[in-house]
Image (cartoon, rainbow, N blue to C red):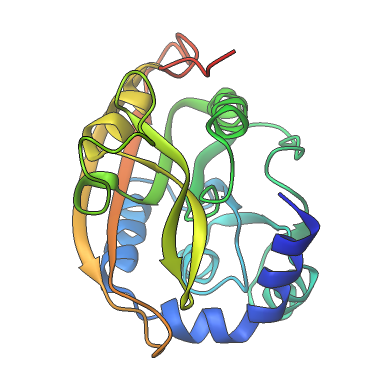
Length: 234
């Protein structure tokens, strides 16, 4: 992630929280994940922002929360407002400390290249305990990218650097189709147990309606069985 993007997220901080905190689709996904976890489970929130609502919901459910974000101001807020351990880190460079019962990647991968996300996701999957949960939130391509658009990869699974509106400006975005996001997780030896696709309007006049997909996948009892598919272009 570029220095400019780091600065953008830091500048948004509390505005972003206010615009996205009352998202019923995100909250329903987190509630489903919590119901599938034991109390005191160790969980990792990648791209935690200010901690609202994901890390805060997990902490209130008595989970052991570890959170990371690229924006120092957001991490400061999370550290003050949410019980857990939070640190400034880029998801591509961050090395998980030990094993986790669940890892949450909720709209924190959108500015990455596919190759960078592929590497990061594989790393996080390997940090899951057998039976652990991988939870992803993304803007699915299904309603935003025409099927004949040249931005699609060769397997027609994802687009990267696709200009999607965010905060009133085009934002180069990584997106999967709904089915490809499921297949990406399944290729690592996971079973999808939850999948929704809904339209959400952030509480800010600068923001457009977003087509949001939330997926929960459970890692099989033998751990990761393969790297995510498709493989990145060389």
